[in-house]
Length: 139
Image (cartoon, rainbow, N blue to C red; front, top):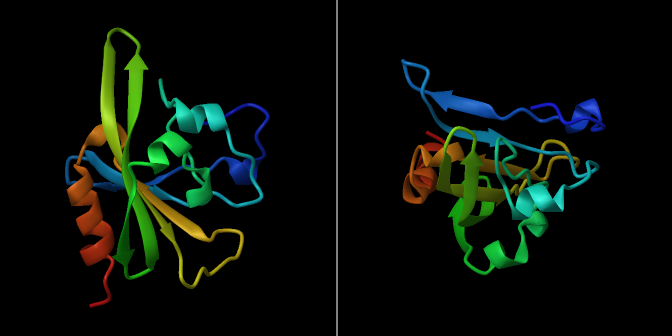
């Protein structure tokens, strides 16, 4: 989604993991630390404006209280769910899972974090944790 007034390098479209029928299960992204943060978007995600975290420091305090830490092959991660709501033809809300990984060895210092999520909670938090702890492991 393009947000007016936001530099092109800060318009970070998530990459998506899909099945054979193009159903999206989870996505991942990395926002450069030089980009601004929309605190309202991160605190009250709704109607297509999903949170975008540059680092774990961008996680809202109320959400951070419920976060836990897990170890991934890429570095430590904060895991939590966050309420997202959509009110178009009808009101619906979801508990979207997030995993915010602080990379041990970032390839680019502008991107020290990798964020995984499941927009509209297509998979559970425990499934998303499995993705980042087991599926990302070297084989």
